Image (tube, rainbow, N blue to C red; front, side, top):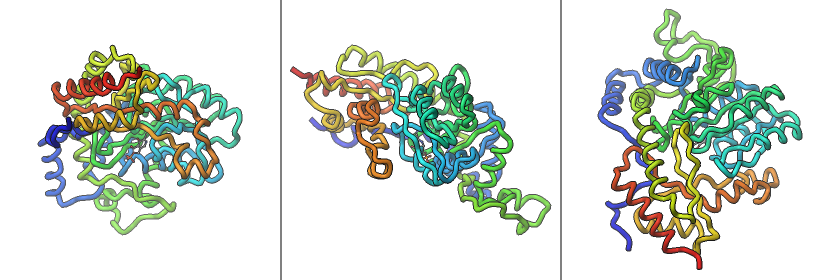
Length: 391
Ligand SMILES: Cc1ncc(COP(=O)(O)O)c(C=O)c1O
């Protein structure tokens, strides 16, 4: 029986309140719409929240990853080690710079890049200029091993922390463990500015390079141009940079979201715990590992297809018919025509990613979910699974 649309539980819904509304109005009424005081304040507050020396606000994590790789010295003919089990942004930025991704398969337990595979890639392939681990769903990669391998080969680490705020690894905030880290504030992320991102680093040279490249390769930031004693027309272009700055309207939203981010995390953790309680007795489900330091951005369950008479697509369709919005993270990049054809990749080149993809479903996990909705989602998963038990 399908429910009417009012009953539909969307896969995601952002948590926005009167605070964000007031922040937007404040900026609109200020007469200054582009990057200025709000972005500066957001950067300072974000840097303090994660304990990094520099935070550089950008208009997306994709832009931030581009800047971070560029500042790490990635360029034409180079290579960057990353995972195929990610969104295309992680790999496309490598291509922006004329470098090539070297994909390393994930581990079956947490779906994160396998450090042994990184080591083998470094031993095998020349000219690797960076390692880019992705904390999938906010679950921390094994950063101590990754840093030690990076150290052995003197290769910088750029963390794709798009999912990872405010997760940590052994107490250290994700995104601050490598040479630089990049967070996403896209609409579905753990905190949002609609579109937006933040790059963090402790390295002053890298921070300066990213700041310059963020805004056309100009040696003066917009705000400085209009507030300092120097004439606003007086600036120097020192590079062919990009247009990646975060406007103040977005930064003002980000500041409010940041203030609420602990509460958001607690809500997502509670949902993950509730799913575990309500679903762990179903042996056709493989639940994500318990991860007390995860940002809990995604809740990816894997189906044990050998116990079911339907595949993942049918499972998703039946949940949709019950009014439950879900998603799939991810179709691995080696199956995507661009990467497949360019690098002559075969589906079984990355067997763990392929297997995870064929049986994963991401369930809704966001603070706006009511207890009743969480229970209904779990009950719907059980209903679909129990009704599709194999003979
Ligand atoms: C793992 C990962 N990296 C990078 C990005 C890019 O983020 P943005 O949309 O802010 O550019 C995303 C976006 O979903 C992502 O999932």
